[in-house]
Image (cartoon, rainbow, N blue to C red; front, side):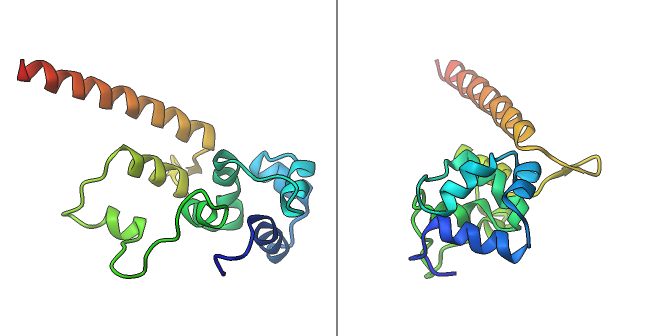
Length: 143
């Protein structure tokens, strides 16, 4: 895949590779088939949320789709670590953006079933609440 390729043609290529119709993708990802057609023709640009829904269907990373769509810069090849390398590096301390990236990019299973995007978003909201509570507790300890 080349980074110069636009997101619409890339998504079309992926859909054709999996031999899926736009209606198939609508059923699998919850993305309206006519909206998907508009994206593939370059009429509309998908939102990050739409890309998060499409990534597991096309078996590509959310991060990759975000780069192709122009939402994220292409990772530098000189020493830049992939998300997987970061997760398994004991010296790496993720921040809340990394947690979001992980939840949206990974095909997470829970009790043997793939976790839905809506459930991932709920987990992110819970994580944000916990993060804020922790920050408040640490601030009150400093006073």
